[in-house]
Image 1 (tube, rainbow, N blue to C red):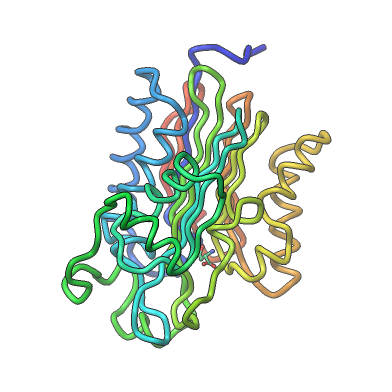
Image 2: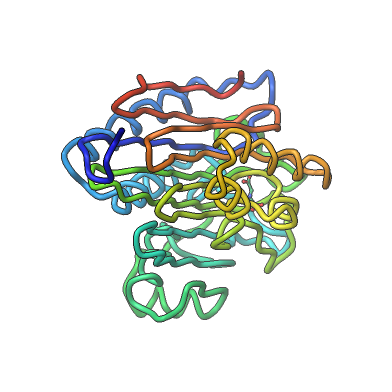
Length: 295
Ligand code: ASP
């Protein structure tokens, strides 16, 4: 059986459960494939799970291909507000930002909240003040910076209830687990709306047994309990896929849809969803690279 320290590692990424059947995500899959290979190489080199999930999510944010970071849509007041979170399993340290405007990489700022403040979550003007005081990179020209993500039309940015998110979960060679998630939220959201993504518990979770990142309709994920409900079931002996399926069932019952990526201490990977599709990629020392959007 795999010990807590071993040379095994596992990694899964998602680019959101908002994929729409019939649209072409070839470019996204190519991006996920390359990024997963690069991040797996970091894990193979002994880099920590915490560093790797941050690096992966920061790249997903800055690519502009997903509804996160550069690919985010404006709220109904006309500007982009971002949510992100990160969690380190061994210490249960966590950091998050919500309704943050004007910065390039909310996941990096979330890690800053974790490491440089006694708090878990900073929101709105306070998150902005923190990011400014620590010199995180600002968006200098929003009109120029934000672009339409892959699989979305310009009209849908302001005129649909589509959504998207990016996330990463990893187990490193020391046995540490970590998770990170980042989003531009749901299209057409009200100013100040915060979904599951920056909430440690519903959107992102990592402990000694499991690391989880969720995507989907945030209001329903929050009301289902989300990631931590999966972690509790898993800890009490429910099989990984069953624990996730139960949570997804609950999201569906409440009227939403969602996707989940998870890695366990024993290097098991699960990527499950009940939306039309979820952009995803995974690899481990036991599992060959797998990249997909639909079934
Ligand atoms: N969960 C995100 C939110 O509600 C959206 C998504 O994952 O697609 O903000």
